[in-house]
Amino acid sequence: MDAILLAAIGVAAGAALQSATGFGFALVAAPLVFAAGEPAEAVGLMTLLAVVVNGLILLGERRRPRPLGRECAVLTAAAAPGTVAGIVVLRALDAVTLQIAVSVGVVATLLARRAAQDRHAPAWAGPLAGFASGALNTSTTTSGPPLLLYLTGRGIEPGRLRDTVIVVFLGLSALSAVALWATATTEAVPAARDVLLLVPLAVAGQLTGRPLFRRLAHGGGYERVLTAMLLVSVAVGLATAIA
Image (tube, rainbow, N blue to C red; front, side, top):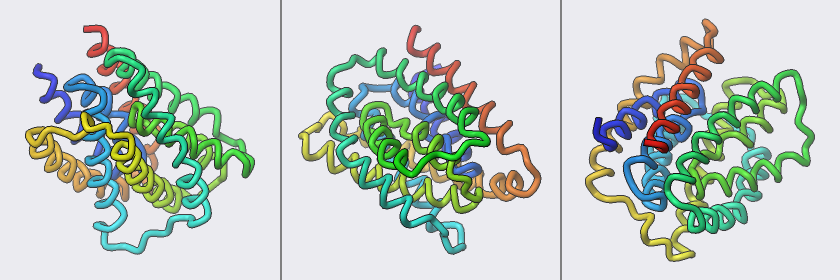
């Protein structure tokens, strides 16, 4: 199957997962988007798509968001220097290495979720998680693992955790865009064809995931759905990397 078609499937599925759980868009979509183009362009495209998906979650669901302001501020501020470090990594590694790194990031998220159960992250872990997320966002677009490890360790109620993560993701997207511009990474500008194809699919995926969020929140199954989607993204990402 053509790489851009696989990327389209990944974007739609990732947007639905992000809408349903608060995590997973980059983890599902990034390996396939990276396989369809150059690393820098993939980062720019994923940054744009993340703004679309997360903006719809936060502002398009006819509800009042309830993010934790302090957590959002700490994580986003700490991510700022991390985004610059991530661009250095982006420029230093080739496409295959970065694609494998994206898949490794997915595995790291699964391990982080396991490690965070029944543990409480100390407050000093926030700045470290923010910096790591910023670096991952501009190098592989998979900023979720450190955020997930830190926030789940804080014992936050699922609905508020989802909103907090979405706000941080939007902040990371803004920081990444500024960092790419400031470092003159012009190759990160996505092609118009890809934008026109993938943005509508991201919107459709987000709309599809809304009822799933309500169902998972009340009926359980959150962990099983997330784990299954992440494992699929690992398999596809590694397959495309070595093909």
